[in-house]
Image (cartoon, rainbow, N blue to C red; front, side):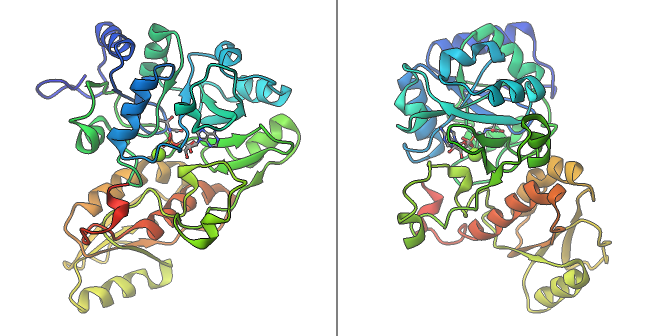
Length: 356
Ligand code: TXA
Ligand code: MG
């Protein structure tokens, strides 16, 4: 727990859990580790507490939140008309990085669902989150613990950086294993649709339910004409094209041109940061060079921490080695694409994306 001094990462005591549960009951916000990213947790049934999430993040009030449950047996308190497919998926993947969108039960606050008739539910696979959920014994609403539109936190230190003054307590569960947000699967309509790709793939899901979910295309950037006409879709902030973004402008370059591109930009006087995958460090002193693992799971585990680090290194531009266009890279490629679209607003004080 990270209240005073320099806490040892990953050490959370039973007392810390009880304290966190008491804070949630008192309507306070708590930083909660999960296997995907850190969440900004509040009592999902306390409308005032949920309101604090939105003001802390600077998130628009009509964006729904995921409710975290201690186990699948709690589903019936939150969802109705639960399809068999949901039960099968919960059995296969919970606790784990899969969020199910289901018809909501009466009594689930509008503040949580953004006023929609559906609710997002998942059981996270992290011992600290599960201990907190069991102690709390009800639903915990928790979006990623970052300011709206910014890079999701994958360590307790990131949460303190983003929202330190807004949370009563940050439980330090160490670095998140998965590193990118859960797969979101909408089961509230006729055909299953993946609203956000994640570590659990369409193929994993098809294996369990016997049909392959469609992947919904990213929304147009918020505020554009295309977004304004897209009214039949549920609001999913994770599906806005500009999301998960560093303040430094970010572009991708294929492996074949990465070194050349970075050197050209440096030659033009830019301070250049590079996130490579397979390209070797050319040891060019003008470049801040980082390598991420070459496998999708390893890359996902490190992506946000590396982006955060490069965003803070004083570079004018971040150049990222483009990822393969294959199914196993889909979830991280999705995050990188959004990071590129949303990047670069840090140097313009008037940009509203900073505040909203
Ligand atoms: O891995 C995760 O899912 C993390 C950890 C903390 O659990 N949480 C997370 O929460 O990523 P957040 O709020 O940053 O993203 C949740 C996404 C949002 O894009 C939200 O709009 C969508 O889930 N969502 C929640 N309820 C929904 C609903 N009823 N219909 C459609 N989308 C929903
Ligand atoms: Mg988020």
